[in-house]
Length: 553
Ligand code: GLC
Image 1 (cartoon, helix red, strand yellow):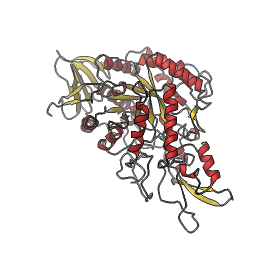
Image 2: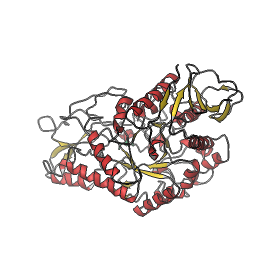
Image 3: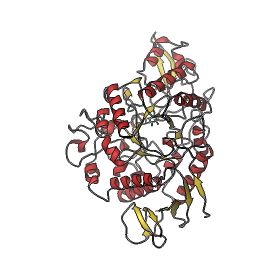
Image 4: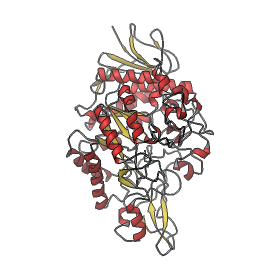
């Protein structure tokens, strides 16, 4: 393999190199004790994030919501749901994060609202042909009496993508489109009133001082003209990440919306940023979201979806740097979030598991936990050495595995209900965090209530236990984040090195990085002095499923 230098796109804005920690508010820390995490809980735990060494936090939605999709069904975009606190609690959290030098990104859900949103209720009341209905995607049904849905699209969560409403006179009426749950009607983004409303929502949060937005379903907001029928392949990922030419994903028109939002953000000081959630099949397409006048970042899902395979991992890193570099954007890197199986489990699965399917008691191919954790730690050790911006998901710094044995009666993901239990969905990565080995709910609160049951082995992963063990996953993350900052690894060049087919190896300045994805120990150059080992080892041979950072004499 020739030595090839690859650069992260230059620029000094904070988001080009930031490590951004995703907080899933329901499951982070619960100050009120009702079993669901909240904003005061986050504020109380900010010191733990300063100690971890992250640059920013992204909060999944905490706005007013009936919680049919864990807050991704927003009924009021300008207020905090009482479950999570108040706007004053938000302002306090933001001020306290900023005081610690931590930036704050909030989740924006523009593809759909909750059916409890005032606009949707008005649309139901106003009837066909009204301006109220024109904010959403209402259509007449097919069939003699309109009894069939307008097309064959299937919801991401299972079942059809259309719901028939009952009109004011009691007769079956029009149908509305919902990519997700029936309680999440899609907005019609061809309507200027919708566009103006979201500009105003962006300004509402920017005026409060947020540093940016993570934009939910950023590839779904525009649908193909005429809404033509479409049938995805049977093994498709739920968000469309592997499919080409889907009439509701990645339509060209979405980019106009982001060009418009770019201008809204640019009018503010402080390098406010947009990060898109766009599941596109190729990195080339993914990079279209971050052309210079559009979003600033977009999640690198092709990287997240890469299996534990050296050739595939080298290829996706190479291509990421090329494709994002070509549009002048930093690559992002992400291994876990609230929609995928945690990477300390996912990287050791032995059966196919499309994104969104989840793992439960009856799933095939469950991972060996020891192999999973070793690979998870090694994968992060590689990721945090890459130039660009990295996203961490709460709990991965503890090495948490997926919770795979949640009893059916506790499940809450709409996917589970809409597929009649055929797909477990995403509850397994959303279980409340263990802060202490002892005490109610492992320190998540002081009442013991927890909206999803915490597995018994959570005690081993509790933060207070990991804080005192110098070979814990938490200690590894802290070390990686400190050295990443000290060596300025978020920007600059990456030089590939050749350590054989089973290795991923590159150099960042004086620091060498290597991971062993093969099945035999991997010899490293003579005299290697290790500064990070994802798992403790003696000598210069990198164990299977391990990664290291080292210098050479
Ligand atoms: C995004 C969110 C996911 C949610 C969906 C619908 O994919 O990350 O959690 O269910 O959008 O809003």
